[in-house]
Length: 467
Image 1: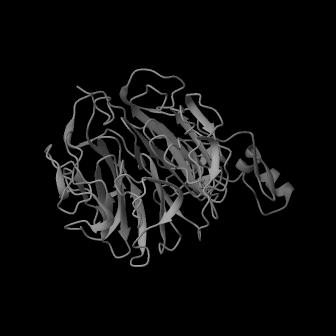
Image 2: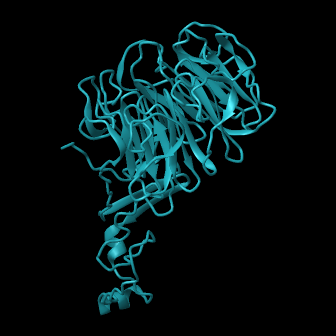
Image 3: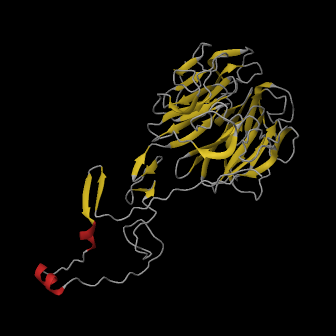
């Protein structure tokens, strides 16, 4: 039987003390709890002293406890369990936004996670000043800390004001409001800095874009969309036409404009081993590059350097992911569809038959899916209720159950999942509202973030080194 771990939610209860201090911007309040408990008589002090304290009025329950400073449920406690949440951090109404509440104070926390082949990166802090922390394999500098030392705990890249981060095979990219930065392996020019020199620190992509941008990192190539989706660019390896450019060169260290950039406006882009897919505004999916396993979804197995429309394109697509040799999408109605390689059940249709057109992922109970991520040979999806379902290859326990390939979705015993990131043979999840990160599966390079490398573990555990 596979071992699993339920995600526990921490509950912070503030108990009354003899003296409590509330300190906020422009606010300093010292309260004497004992004085607050004494009844107050509107008459003169002598009459109050002579007559003695007035009796307390009986408590009348008014419903469930609200964060309002009143004992609404008459259990003798006020605002219990509500002052430790990001919406009421330390006092009612103090919101931490995208960060977490820690002992009554807002703190930086993970707001987004991505996974590469054997490394993970997380966006940390407030959306206007987010930083990037990474951990795991670093043999090509993909962690961006200036070294090639493997890290089993998160390290900071030094970037600030980051809007988005993307993890590739052995490289990583991030966007700010006006620039794209990449670092790591660069043998095919996938960093886009005009060279093929591996970089251990974030390096600016040479092209000038009209930001903000959406960036996607594949095995040896990278693609980006400008803020309006009117222009798409790719750079790096192009042996199968995965750059989508009107050229037959094997690789480019400079960003190239997509050949169809003037014909369509795209909403999102994703990159696999040697293929690329993008969602057109309006819902159609277009893919190009390698297609030996049907990963372009056009009903053939022929590679194409020009975009081809995915056959039987589902309804309006809200999420898209291209993995090594398969692709998946989530529609507006919450269904998942996948196509391409299926040797280990990557497509989640209950078979191991490769598909050159999309097939419906058979999630029991048909829950509404909101986000999907695909790793080397597995995929995971988050539901609107915060549940997590995974399927496909499971040699290292990346599905969160005892190692055994599963061609149909299996539900992990977790709750409160806000986002999932599937890596090569491991998986990580971002929890809500705690903003904590849990990882499981392969840990040969420290990608589970537990402070040491070691054997694979299918049991989800927290990454302790995040803020």
